[in-house]
Length: 92
Figure 1 (cartoon, one colour):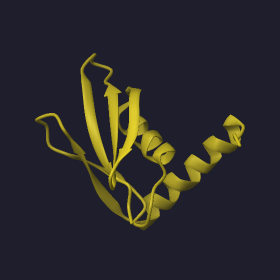
Figure 2: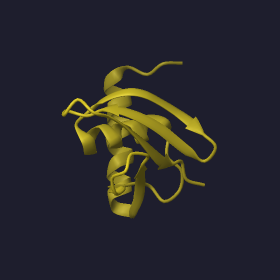
Figure 3: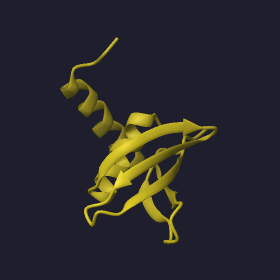
């Protein structure tokens, strides 16, 4: 069952808003740069919400996103042209 894009985006915005209110979690970059801090829900987070959060934080284009274990692996083409990979905790 697919959601219209406006309903999907409104759910992502709600998830991100809840994340800002509930606390912060580290997003680990696989590259040799320090992890960035982003808002995240303390419980669980959907892949779509993690992708939206990383895209909003980096301003880059999402190339690939998948779940591996308890983390989401998200590849981003940064505005500078560099591809970076981020790991986001999927929560509990």
